[in-house]
Amino acid sequence: MFAMAGAQRAHNQWVARLIRELGQQLRGRPCDVYPSDMRVHVEATGLYTYPDVSVACGDQQFRFQPDTLLNPVLIIEVLSPPTEAYDRGRKFEQYQSMESLREYLLVASD
Image (cartoon, rainbow, N blue to C red; front, side):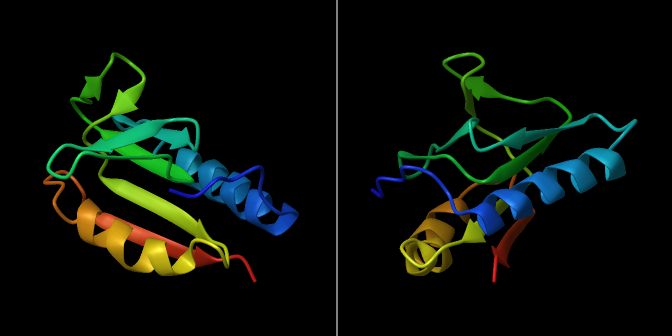
């Protein structure tokens, strides 16, 4: 677990751009783009995370309705030095157990 008190300016700018662009690209489709306040649960491993950006399409499933997303199709993490190894390694391994997940994108903010 990583205690995150806030993100650097570049990190926040990347997240804002990604949410804006994805929202534009997915307009008119049955998809929602969520910021980091949407918790994601990996049922197979018990992991709960707050990805920087997540996207869910179609029949969205939630645990603790509607606080925790169960079936994202896209998860994006903007990398930071304290979490990069975890985002690339153990977290990604756990995300891979999600049947719904189609893409996992890592963005270097530098």
